[in-house]
Image (cartoon, rainbow, N blue to C red):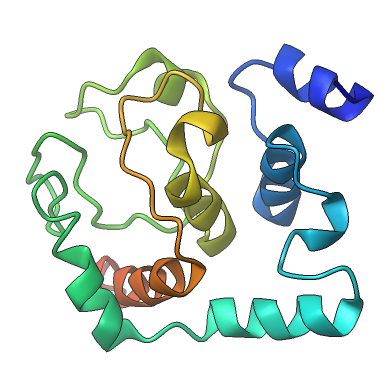
Length: 158
């Protein structure tokens, strides 16, 4: 085990934010640090990140059908999982009306495109102890879902 992985393992549910969180999860999973966004060279990393940011929201709506059994898009509607309304920028485990796992209550994750992608890729590795077990391994489908969620969960700004 590398010193980095040992440090992450001893950190418990505390998780870094943004890109650092993704890299930390990948290191913990044994993925070489240079491949965090798809390659060891900066051009590949940049292209992969652009692909991630430019997900297809229409395709993401179809992907969300898999999530809709547990998650609602409207405020206050709780299912097996918490509602996703106002998701981006919200601290994980922060909805008072939902009974989160201890892991999600104690984490300091703030939902961004990057943290959500890392979580969806492997929830139990990203937040050990979470009840969410469904993984979404396909990076393109995750990007599409996130593009859709960015639109569908946006709070009205007045």
